[in-house]
Amino acid sequence: MSASYDPQNIFAKILRGEAGCVRVDEDEVSLAFMDIMPRAEGHVLVIPKTAARNLFDISAPELARLMPAVQRIARAVKSGMAAEGVVLQQFNESAGGQVVFHLHFHVLPRWSGVALRPPGGPIVQAAELEVHAAKIRAALAAQ
Ligand code: 5GP
Image (cartoon, rainbow, N blue to C red; front, top):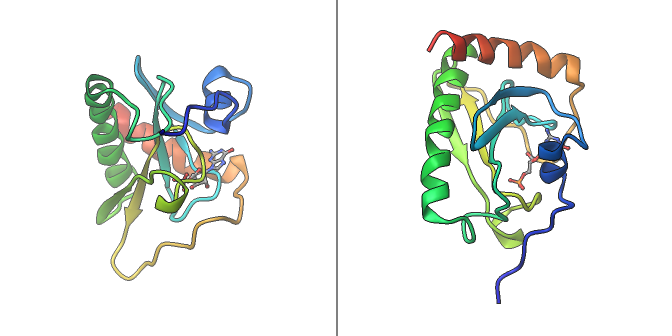
C-alpha cells in the first residue's frame, strides 16, 4: 500500500499561508518559491496546489497542468540568474531522497565549474533569497 498525503507537511502549510516563503510566482495550479537551503544561488521549488505526496499519486491531468509552470520557472531562472544551464530534480519517497512529502520540482541554475552545494543547509535568510527572487520575477515579467 502506498503512503498517504500528510496535510501538515511544510509545503502544505506554505500553500495555506500558515508558513512563510519567498514567493517567485503563482498561478491557478502552482506556486514557485525560493528553497530555504539553496543548493545553488537562485534555487527555486515549484509545487502543485493540489495535495500530492509525490509523482506516484498525482493524477496525470494535474501533472500535465503543472509542467508548464515548471518550464516557465526554468526559463526565468536561466535568464534571471544568467545561468548557463538548469537542472531539474524531483525525488520520490525517502529512499529516493525525498524529505518533504508534497510533490515538488527543484529548479537549479548551473554554471560551468560551479558545483551544487550538498543538500541540508545552511538556511539562507529571506532577505538574501529575495535578491535572487527579484531577478527571477523580473525575468518572468519579461517572458
Ligand atoms: P526533497 O524533499 O526534494 O529532498 O527536498 C526538500 C527541499 O525543501 C530541500 O531542498 C529543502 O531545502 C527545502 N525546504 C525544506 N523546508 C523548507 C521550508 O520551510 N521552506 C522552503 N522554502 N524550503 C524548504
